[in-house]
Length: 258
Length: 269
Image (cartoon, rainbow over all chains, first blue to last red):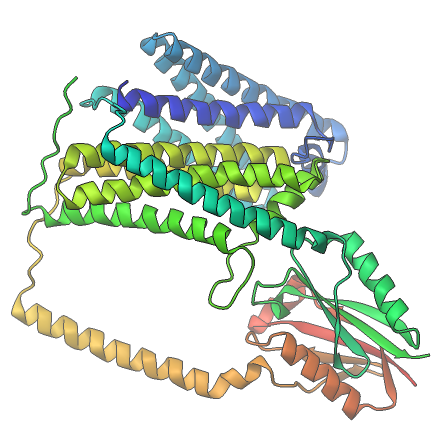
């Protein structure tokens, strides 16, 4: 197979999956088992409310319009992929061009919205996707016009060595991952051990797996182990105090003698 | 079709260098990703990212709390990353041996694995609803694609092949570099000499109202500075009991490049 064609497949698979998941995210608007996604409805409602358009019809219509464009883009990429698979390169290229055009339109709309709603970070995000799409099209198109290398995968000696090294490294890393997982999974629920950093002030370094259950178990264990202390106040250490990035969360518990 | 050999000669140092940079970048990128997974957790000289915690929390949010699911997802990731690393290493080896055809084949597989990895991540980001990571992975996917284009098409780019610098320009540029480096280094060392203490130093609380005090932390302050400041506050105000600490949110500290600001509320013991 030609290398250019393989790259075209990879580009198409990427954008088809990108839009497939984007469309699913709109069909499944809330959090369900096996799907979390982003809550675009809430986002749109808040954006339009900030403009003074509190009626949900504005957000709903805008979201439906964007979803329509995304569905069209998805269908274009899907058809492009299917036609490439069938060997109809010209038709595939036409569908890809349509998909890219719709996508560029979508991200242009998003960017206009970001400016209106004053969301500069999202503006950056959408502009980056916009340029990635344009360059994807250039790569897809430009490669079909230039010289072509044939991708051949022969099990030569060096490839065999490469595969062997890859398998060994994967096994070693997987064993390490399994060990780490079994060593740390208990952190999800186990109470965190605190230390008294100032008289009456106890610090708890929460691990990355720690969540609300860890916090509740930590407080329970702390009160059980220190029956003479009364918890007056709990303070969450802000990120500025946690610059080492080694700890998920810092928690300070202020106490006094009963 | 017969593969065409790329026109690389010893004269085209710049083009060779660009290819070396691309190969070395991707080797280091995947090597450190793999090392991060082998080490796991924060250790002396390596903090890295706790991927198990991250992926486990992601799957937990889907209702798949069993750690085996996170482990399987991570093993697929590790497989892709490891093979990408191996193929980039092979490409570098062949490139050093001037075996251009083999270099391109190994590099292509490395790039294909890189693109597959980031597509796989992007799908996950959509499912888990993490749009910041989606942007990050989309960008890496794009950089991988561009790397491949530049690597195979660098011969088509007009590039100078003379790296020599004239004596006069060499001397003046060296003097400039040495002078600016000396000034910058002195400035950095002086800042270290005067400011490192801020990392742990206790700060004075300023009374704002009858029972509310403000502490302004410098940027360098860490958790020790906070703890020492609280200890100092308690020592300085033995009759006061801390009942609440309010962290000033970012919008309230945009002026004067404010770092962390906290307000302490107290009551008489």
